[in-house]
Length: 137
Picture (cartoon, helix red, strand yellow):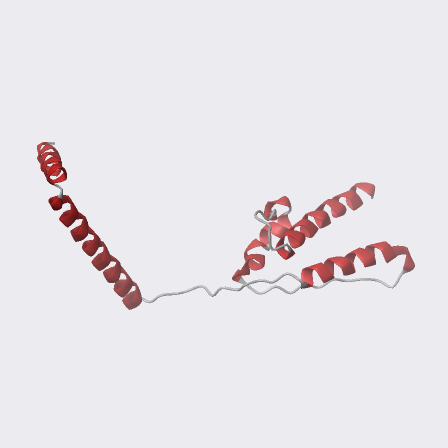
């Protein structure tokens, strides 16, 4: 029974650490991998879904400390601000337009680079040599 209680404390402390890091605006690393539950909830807690948290308590005086800790955890969890982001699903036409724009901008960039190389005679000569070497290979 003592091992089970120790295991529950370890699991709960991992969840508390994740919630604490999420409420702390300065946290750079959130330890989702410290427990299986926080790992499963990682996507939802990161803003890719909705999260509902149900905390159960008891009025029994023998569990007052556990009830108090649960209420503190619930209060801390309530302060987590999840910035939800909607997954974008693009249709084929939108993807084609997107890629055509990207190709167009890349072509423009290539033309600018070519113009810059032609203005510099050293670059133009070395580029011609590189092209000849590539063709020979």
